[in-house]
Amino acid sequence: MAKVYLTTPITDAQVREIKAGDEVYITGTIYTARDAAHRRMVEELAAGKPLPIDAQGAVIYYVGPTPPKPGQVIGSAGPTTSYRMDKYTPDMLKQGVKAVIGKGYRGDEVKSGFVQYGAVYLVSTGGAGALLAKTIEAAEVVAYEDLGAEAVRRLTVKEFPTVCIHDATGGDQYFAGQSQWVKPDAMVKPKKPEAGE
Amino acid sequence: MREIHVDQVAETVARLVQEANFKLEDDVVGAINRAMNLEEAPVGQAILLQIQDNYTLAGTERVPMCQDTGVALVFLELGQEVHLTGGDLTDAINRGVAKGYTEGYLRMSMLNDPIKRVNTKNNTPAMVYIDVVPGDQLKVKVDCKGGGSENMSQLKMLPPSAGWEGAKRFIVEAVANAGPNACPPLIVGVGIGGNFDKSALLAKKSLLRHVGDPNPDPEWEAREQELLAEINKLGVGPMGLGGTVTALAVHVEVMGCHITALPVAVNIECHSHRHKEAVL
Image 1 (tube, rainbow over the protein chains, first blue to last red):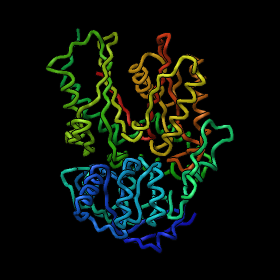
Image 2 (cartoon, chains in turn brown, yellow):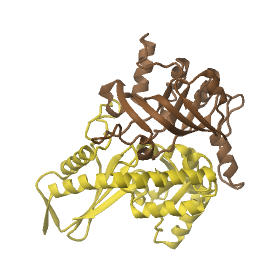
Image 3 (spheres, rainbow over the protein chains, first blue to last red):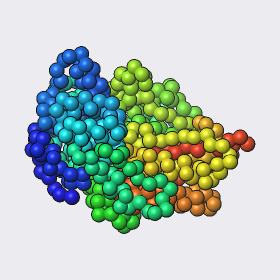
Image 4 (cartoon, rainbow over the protein chains, first blue to last red):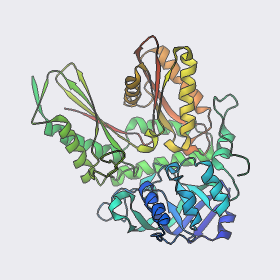
């Protein structure tokens, strides 16, 4: 469990160094996108249009912030639940996205995608939106302004704190962490990652 | 007959949705403090510390503790001696929600239609629940409920043969399935009995209890403790990273039901349990 400090854009070599369980602090540019923005981006890709973000080495953060109060660069900005983006994530990884930040379990196809495309799944603390916003130094809408909180924003962040859940070799920190603490007589055991991931 | 103008309801709702989002109530703070002592995993403790830092910051700066400022659930306990004047009550509640969310810089998360999906830009509609009770007061309870935990909620019409063991398994499995998605440590609201919709309503209303207050029936209090112990054996821990505190509390509400039925509803609430109430 190392501490890894990354500056965007992220290279393949950097991705390979991140292991499930590592604390990963990101500095630089990250893009926000959640349900509606993902749907639109993937539809535009299918229609042969370019993405509104530079996907090479990019980091996407699943967040819909609150509106900034006067004097704030952004409102509260914690992660939203990631599985709702599962349908779109492999397409985004194919475009060169190297890390996605959210919270919660991912589907098997997405987990395979992190291995296949060499990318990582990071999580930040859900419900800690006021605290996480302190690491965001600038925010501007770059696409889909009509989506409001769901618009694509370019954020400038300094040491945005995350933990790696799925690395590019199939590591699964939810399984590893929970396996350490589950009681032998628990009614449900942590879900094993599928073989070959 | 005591008269209350609906504008007063609107103003109260507008104030409560903001307060609820900025400042965590003492019962939830107390439950998280207790969790700090119970959590054995270092990573779990680190997450709980972040949660504490976050709600302290939010309260001090008067900003939302979570960016998902929620669906506004508005529960009214309306005294039957009260006469509401000045127009439509539901409209007034929605006016209050719109005002509170706009003035408080809260996020507009509500859509006009589940398939057309156009944002209403004022966080309405509110979910309104009205109970008529004795007396001449109007109690307004607000819960700003995030979508992530709500999405992990479940309901099942069990056969009576499933019994308590079947109900228990369904509840524990629902929490295990929710895992990190619902932002643990959770408050688990359970409704057992009634019918399809009443069980869900019981589960929802159980969340209005102060966190950790027991069911008044000692037998059900014991079952709440049994469920909490089973849930905390799962190892899910704060934010699912592994630990000994997966739930802060389990609240169970029960009601009689048909001879064919054993409805069980599990309404899951995240650690950012934003509730607030006022009496008019």
